[in-house]
Every structure is written in C-alpha cells, then in structure tokens.
Length: 328
Image: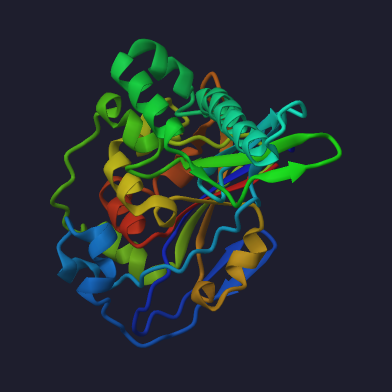
C-alpha cells in the first residue's frame, strides 16, 4: 500500500459573483462565476431533511464521483471497497458428482457456497477500521447486540450476479456484498455504540457561509503521511486538541450512504470536473496519529482556517461533498 492518504471535504457550489484564485503548491485553480441556483427540497430530502432548507441554497446536490474499486483493500476471500462503499466476499461449494440428480447437486453446492461466503464476509467485516483505535471486531466483542446485528446483516447480504459454475473444477462460486455506510449496513449495526452529537437542527454560521462563498471544497492532503481509510477519521491540531470527530455525524453518514462520504484516489479527475472549476482550499497533513494510523494532525496555520468545520460539516455531508482520497 502506498503511503499516501488524502481526506477531501468537497462541496460543489453554485454561487453568484465569487471570483477568487488560490494556489496549491504547483496547482493553480482559477475561480469561475456562476449563477445562483436553489436546490429543490425534494432533491435534498433524503440527506438533509433535518437541516433548514433555506440554509442549503448555497449547496448543489452532488452526483456520485467515487469510482467503485478505485480505493480497495484486496484480501484472500474478498475485498473492502472504500470507493464502492461495500465489503464483498466470495464462497465456493463443491458439486457432489455422486448425486444422480445434477440439478439438485448444483443447488446444494450453491447453498454451500452462500454459507461459505457469509462466513468469509463476516471475517472481512471484522477487519474494517471504524476509527484509529478500533475495528468492527472490537465492537462485536464488546457489544452482544452489535454482534447480533452484524450477523443479521451478513446473513441478508445481497448476492452479486448469479452463481458461477466451474464444470472443470466441479465447484459453484457465489459473491456477496454489504454496505459500509448505510442504515442497512455496518454503520447501522454500529449505531447503538457510536453515540454522537445531536445535530438535528443546524444553522449555518457566518464562517461556514464565508467558506462556501469562497471555495468549491476543502482538500486535506495526506501526501506521504501514510494514513489509512476508516469509517470515522478524526482531525487534530498539532497540540493534540481534537478539532473534528466524524463519528459525531454518523447519522448523516448513515442516511446519505455513499453520497455522504466517498473515497477517491484520482484527485485530478475530480478537480477537472466542471463543478470544481472554482478553487478548492487545499491543506496538507502534518503527520498521522492513532494506533491504526487513520487520524490526521494539521499544522497550527492550517487549523486556524477551520474554525467553521464542526458547524459546517453537516452541510457538506448533506450535499454529498465529503470525499476522502486514498492512494493504495
């Protein structure tokens, strides 16, 4: 795995008369002036029902930008697809050649393959990083209700395509998947232990509005810091003070699914899209922290630019503009 990780909080905005220019190292992005557009309540209901709609007029609902498989951990029996917001596992069942009823033999092999895939999926899910200190396995060990919920989700995992029969090897293969951020996925199963802040009513602070009027997004560049993807990364200043714990916004991440938090690796592809013609704010990670290496430390200079982030993150999540860049 390459030692580069980038968290990108990004909003695609339609703002009137905000021509700006910023410089990001060798990258220079010039602002483009666009007309104001007000998002219809029906388009935002799925992800922003608890936020006053009049405050969301600065945000344009996002199209999905992450490419499934772009940021992916390949494991022996499946993979954790952070870009696709899924965990996938494969199972195989052996066809009983001694069974004179070939159709029945295939069906029994398929059922066996599903059981094996469920077992493999459960093992893969245990290894998903929840935050910088814990994996899903820790929650399943500490909370019986979470263990039961995860087991239930695994048993009801959706099958990808039809079962594949290898007549030469005499086996049937089945692939199952479950979502990471979804009420029916991992985040839903972990919700009882995550807690979080009550952010059912959020108003836009002047600092948040100023950011939205000036920038098309916020990019936190891990560079060679070697951060790892997780469900709920934290951001600290260089004195060790916690600036942001995304776990506090778990309800937004869960309800918005992939649209709320997305993992990418090709930043140029994103910035070349018309929605990013206006300049993003780009900050660099000073170093990483946490046992699993998923948390970010920013310099004091950069943290001074993020006083609005706690209040502003719900708006970014509700617009589907919270992107995490990982190069693996």
